[in-house]
Length: 406
Image 1 (spheres, helix red, strand yellow):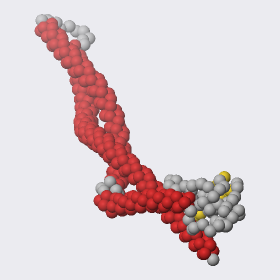
Image 2: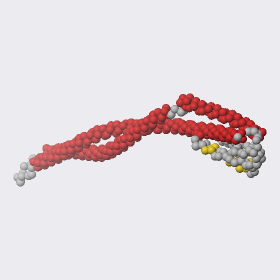
Image 3: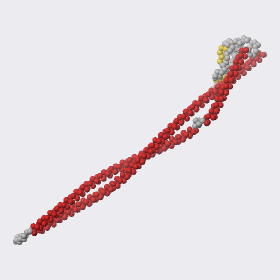
């Protein structure tokens, strides 16, 4: 006998068709059965139901016939339901009641989960500060603007440092040039000092020569006076003897001439010496005046160069101090913005972790929701299939009953 029995399996295996002996044939064991299976997609869409097929290894009945395709032939005049059928229907009704209770419980659980999900989306999601990312976007934009401004300031500071370095190099070159000029002027001054020392020595030598010439002239005058006195004494002591002889030599005139020549020569030598001395003295005075002017100009130039070097050194120190301050400010700015970037990175990492957790939680809840909707769809399909099978069974019983009455 091949009789369609109820088999409504769900995803959880709530109902399974029993395989007793055929209630109408009274004999025959169901060898194999394949219940209709329900496959539901996500959200209860695309559900397909496969038909049930029962194959009996032996058939029999009250009239000695076989049953095929959900109908049985009655050979006797028994009632509509026998004792086995009543027990089977009672068992099926009990299982249906249990199934409906479980369906109602699952529907209640599904409704409760939907309410919880709706409450969670309506209450917690909009008010949770960790889910409001607009503030983070504003903070990120502000920090990006600050980073850009800090980068611009950093570039400006680096440019100022480069300019200060170039200015310091220029001042260093100027200082080296001025130092070279100062050294050359000092070497010239030292050479002029040596020339001045030589001129001083020459002047001293000339003064010594003049003194020696004056002493020699005084000695010659003294010697001449002594000789004149001696000659006068000799002339005063002589005796006049007149003789008739040739005229003698006039010694007085000769001595006078010699004295005049000697005095003229001495005067000439004195004048020549005085002229030479005056000439040398004038030249020395002119050279000394020239060198004195050069020394004064060199001293004033050295003073001016020293003043310039001092001002350059002061300016160099100020530039170096400004450079050190700018470098320290740059290091502080870099450290501060590195710390802020690290904080921002940590904040972004935590926000990304929260987003990943929220995404995983939403995926898990969405998967649970899809599973619940799938279970709901399957249950609805099982209920519809069970209702259809019951209606088919009732129509078959009514048809059999009417045919029996006829």
